[in-house]
Image (spheres, rainbow, N blue to C red):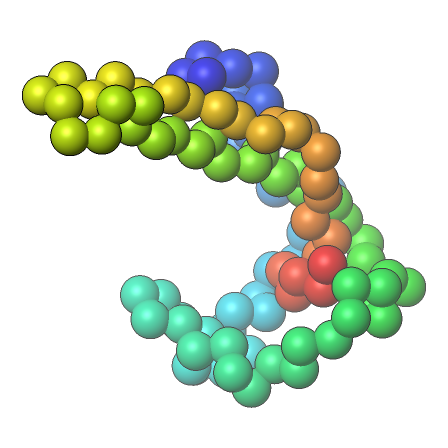
Length: 97
């Protein structure tokens, strides 16, 4: 899936209305070791009314050895439902669902 359409549709410029800044509300959110423990973990639909944007989520590809222990164990690759989900967030960048 290197050149797959799902991976190439990336906006180089933020969409109109993007404010950003959520990550800067708390220094603990900073990378490389973000600590999100101060955020409440709520149900998936509890903040649905706050969502302003969506982003597609490309599910990972899984692989496993089909002949474990062999010098060439052969790998099987499988992606499950590659474009089945969406991420909901605010103009500031807070992800709610």
